Amino acid sequence: MEPSLESSSPFLLQTLWDKIRAQEDFLRSPLFPVLFSMTLYLSCCLPYLCLDTLSSRVALVHRYKIQSQSRVTWAMAWSCLATSLHTHAVFIFPLTPGSLRVAWDVLACLLLFDLQYFVWHVLHHKVPWLYRTIHKVHHRYTATFALTLTFSGQYNRLSVHLRPDPNLLGCHPLTKMFFFTLNIWLSVEDHSGYDLPWAPHRLVPFGLYGGSPHHDLHHLKFMVNYAPYFTHWDRLLARCCIQTNQTRLM
Ligand SMILES: [Zn+2]
Ligand SMILES: [Zn+2]
Image 1 (cartoon, rainbow, N blue to C red):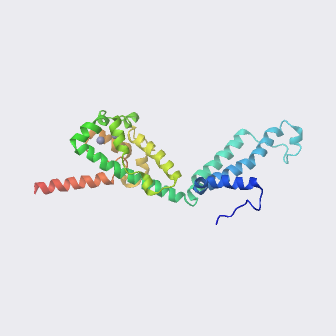
Image 2: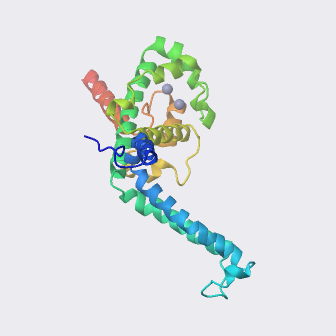
Image 3: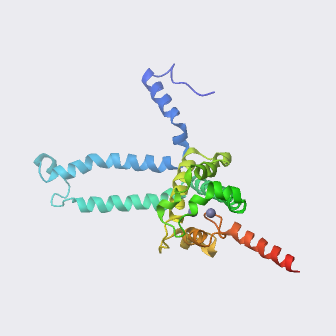
């Protein structure tokens, strides 16, 4: 049974505890320990930073400064803050218990979306009525640019979204937020029309991720590269097509 503070503590403490418990989803998220420690650390620093700005102007403050000749400049404060934020974002957050689970769940959501979109896309190219009625608008431009992602007509957008939701994977709400953000960015990157040195497909080894060159080729050649992100389903489909053609020739 959940312990209550009502009988032993003032009403305010119980109210505070109830408010904290109402944020349970956030408290359990892997982001919480990092944000909490960082906020606490910066809150403790803030009064001393205020003293640093005052010490050169207010004699009373200056009197208590240990090395009275030293001065803290904005450049010094900013370089410490930037290093601290970088360390937390790059080293501490990825090692937080739970963040590995978030990364894994986001990857699972992306793979699920990729499969769903692949099946939807193949169907909308292979069935002439579906292509003519729904998907044809999206293929008006053979060279992609960022806005061509949503240049698809209302039926195309609606039918893309009528698919099993990643919620089926039972992800944490924070994971869903990461997934939706990443999903939108990757979709735009797919249609950007640029193959930049830092493009995601260059970061994933063995050509497992297709990205913008992969999808641009779909707009150019039309009957290739149906998967939006990864390349394994298109490789499998191409192999199946080659095998079917060879069987027909025999
Ligand atoms: Zn298409
Ligand atoms: Zn497209």
